Image (cartoon, rainbow, N blue to C red; front, side, top):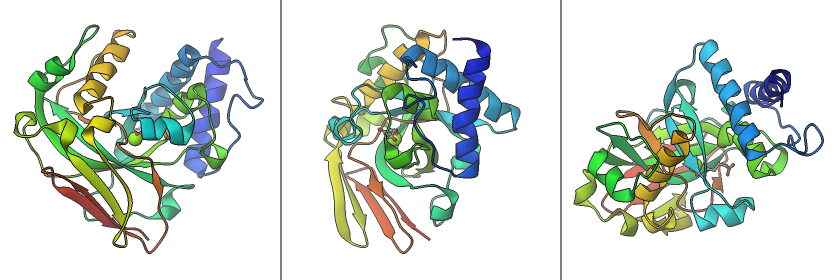
Length: 261
Ligand code: OOG
Ligand code: MG
């Protein structure tokens, strides 16, 4: 895959994101043979373009780390992408659907490390020993592809549908909780729409961070201390519409609430 094609595909998803416009997935007819490795090259170019425009990376995100997400999206392997500064919604602020194409939300458990983690061979124990805090989070995903319909390479080239993140402020040390049995409920206007537990995320959310470190090591990169890390939706994603009041509660790990306008 030459540089020109990488740029063309990165422009394709990047422009759709900026213009809040749905596009056909890359593998539909633009470039059906896109592989996972090539898709990460497209993602790298997309990240480069965003940095060049003056945006900054807030932290990495894992995706497709739970059975619920694999089933919902019909893809079967964890992937990673990046949350940028212009995607962060302050806790307590309303989420405006007009900023997105067809937003959905996901309850996630966040990590902040106190030291960098470089793979390969990083384990969940390594992650827990390197973790400063865990915190509750909600990710807003907004695939640029029609009907959220994509293959794994497509979604990687679309920065894993990253569009928004609300980082809760209820910080806990990882040893204060059994993160795998932390329950989570997502309610909209008082009605439970999805529920799960930390164990839905690769058995334990620390496994997701370990996987991230090991995947990044293939490119000579590491998971950096101090950045909020999203470990992936613990339940299927839920669409939001104006008038919704969303309340996501985590057992022993606080909650994140917001209005949708
Ligand atoms: C891809 C992003 C998945 C997660 O937490 O599983 C993701 C998508 O479902 O559009 O962020
Ligand atoms: Mg997610």
